[in-house]
Length: 67
Image 1 (cartoon, rainbow, N blue to C red):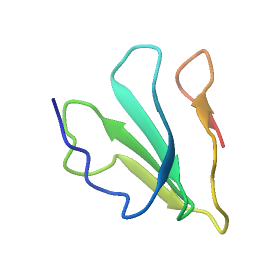
Image 2: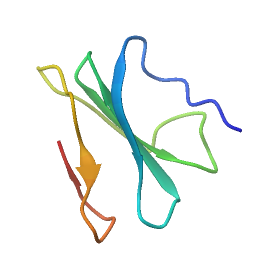
Image 3: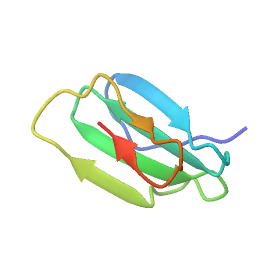
Image 4: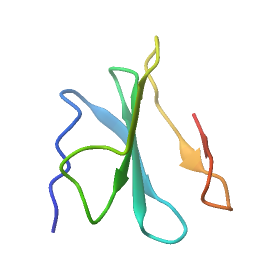
């Protein structure tokens, strides 16, 4: 079990990529984080958007996300 510390408020969606190596998380603050599941200390990608994000997901190729 791993702890991914990054969001400080409600998280509305988490999803693993098809390979199971990355975790996508989005939430109330508008932050999109992508984590390497083997290195959970810090996201490998993080972006703050100016809105609440209720949903996101990986494309079938696992290389892109839709927010």
